[in-house]
Image (cartoon, rainbow, N blue to C red; front, side, top):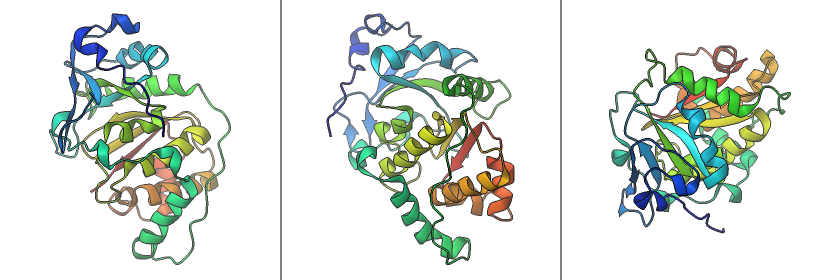
Length: 267
């Protein structure tokens, strides 16, 4: 796998990012991992909480420098800074080396029998949804809601991550939020890539153990939502089994159907 050039070291001597065509607020570079410092910064993180509109303001960094904006926050009682997130990029493979169907089918086989009490095989990928609004516009709207003062992510900060695409952000960081479900988060990013292609998702927020994606083209019928819910179960069983839902169909109706944001949490 060819490694992407990492523009973040430039910010050590040019913190405003003007040489990269950016105009950044005050922030810092983070290279802290479970094994000490990584050989290059993993992300740039703003010093102050994000405000509505800030994500859109950083979006040009994707085009000019290959840096993807994402909210970095706390959740589930974990008031931890990114430096304390147990980042482990050395554990990650490359998302392009895996197949979304194979990844989801393996998770389904491992979890469905115990948690859903079924012997049925993984039903396969849900069909792509009809094209909806522009994915970046939807992502901007979702982020603005998440950074509203009454949101659970009101104190989240914006970060920039060098990645091939939005779906690769967790693996590029070496994020270990789903550690009890999957150590190699690149396998989950393979699924996120598939959702990016089929539903126009963007990875918009990460906490210590939570992931939020915006969804530009969500399922619009219950049948479509139930097909996607099966993928969600394989991707993150805790969402359904510990989320207070009576069944997969209940989750599909409440958390997938017509929803422009999907959230995932791993115990």
